[in-house]
Image 1 (cartoon, rainbow, N blue to C red):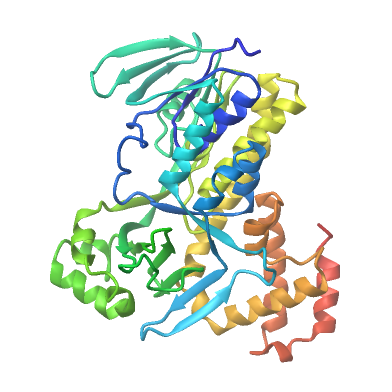
Image 2 (cartoon, rainbow, N blue to C red):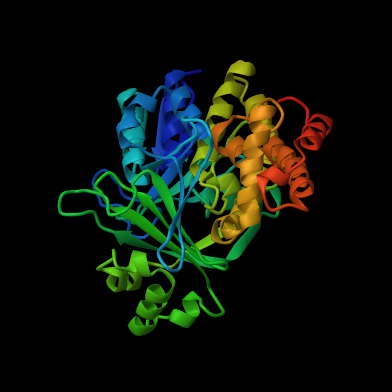
Length: 451
């Protein structure tokens, strides 16, 4: 088996982790990446500088034996810190247990560690500035072009695993080869990345143990902590309407006025706000759903290439790492039969990818709006109370997604049932004391099976 030529398209987080998994199985792996080696060059400005690592992603890293390499990169975040228009703060914990935290991690540093881990196996080679031009699925050949020299080459391989992102050239080639139609839904909102610097002593200017949110109904600002004392700040805003990226344009006075009006406390902490806003690109947000992820035993899409999602549940990376873990498990289960392993990975992961895509879109509304609603806060408290009383039946949906390993599709379906229970129990009350807990217990036992 180790004589097979395995190629991975894309040296991002998922591609680098998958390379480690395959190397541990004794395969020699070649990874092709369009971009330069980020270990030699600075990561591009404005591109998801830090991410939220949760239990599913941790399981993926642990499965590949690389978790110990990244522990020192992690900053625990115990909940959301909400900032209102007057600068008032409201901390909302993610869960009731000490271990129910998520972690801010540098995308670039994590990626570098995974590439190093892959190379140190002695079985993985990375080739940078190599763009995938086309794929011949019948002849099992890939066509590459060198981004620096313009030189082209065609290479044969036994397996091609594509982790080449939301705009995946491999997926586009597969789409043409299979005659399938890929759904690509752009959200009517975009994002700009900004920065709150640390102090001269490298300290944080806000609470470091929280994901900060400035919810404003139709839009929001968020901030995640970095190890150097800074925060990566992201503005999510509609493209059109008022306010919007279109209405602000590149007019400094409009931008400054908008931030001072809507995010006054954050604005005071961003001395380079205007320069950063004008310099950084406007990012797109969208959902990609591919009807098929594989071609026989030759090619398989994983991560964003198969199922790009919007970032509002912090699950893009976590879901991709779970993909890698699932493929590794399937290779065990089917004893190296690639046809069955690819088919089972797709069958098991696709419903879950669709589920988290839906939940991520729903969570945008929650983050920018619902978190301010007293009814939302009441239902959150009630959800925790029901979890205490029925720990094997009622688990808040956010907890199921972030802190458990239930399939996303199961978290989605159970979450819907739980929401109807919460709606019924809080329909006629504004306080936890007003909830009929005996009736609540009956509803939970009647409608929710044990996990």
